[in-house]
Length: 265
Length: 144
Image: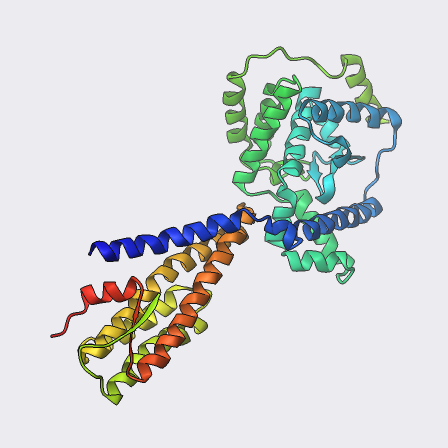
């Protein structure tokens, strides 16, 4: 009996030892998996942005770009995020929306900036989207919903514009998994706190969205792509209560007001 | 790992064929049901149950064929559900996962070769005892 037990144990140990030894090898580099996915992401990001550029109107106002840049710069610097990765685009559209595309393209609609009560609310949404980028949620979602083969095929130019448009729509107006949204929220609060931005207004923004959840208003795109806003606002409030830090505004009130004025022009 | 030993008696032609078939059964089912590792276990179990009243040699090899499926069943099931969670949830594909898959493939190849070898030898009436599974079968399967 003892002999059988020892032999069985040896097989188990042998398997785990094989697994452990093989784990020491970087298979990602050997199979060039990272290189393929990185290249696909880069091509997809540019492809989607090119399609959107044709349909959406990008705001090229230097003042607007500089103001949003200063928010993003502060967040990236405080959180050691490579600023080069985040490619911010401001779109002139009434929709309250912001979303990320592959390869770090981050689109912020003017409707979202105008509906934000203060810069902290806007910073919260930006941090949330940066978190999606940093946590690689965009590619995960695309691979899950569209499939890697279809994505690679898109980059090779084998798919029609309509399919690409539908995929972009998937990113701009549908939700990530609940677990991914929560992970992005938690990460966003960390980003905000490290950037000395008060996370409470972001929670308030979600509460405000929750109240409008029942209104079937076409402008509230960020609500439909980010459900359960009330619940999310609640755990952000709970989380931010545990933090004691002195917050500092990034922009002066004057600059914030001027930003809105420029967007309304 | 695999020992050719002498059995309690010399098995007849018919017995050798049946005993060999128990290993072939697990092989065919393994190929047919590769994505679902449970299928080869079920197939071997059915073959075992239909031969449980057979001669000692047949019963012994059916038991060894069934038991030998257990380790790969656990290994393959874990690999299967890990893959499912990567495809359908937020789980990421890591080097650890790839290492696990390779370990599973290595163990499956060993099992595959051992099964073919045993099926051939048993068909010739030679008694083959696997390391661990042979000893375990000796504990479970007794001559009536």
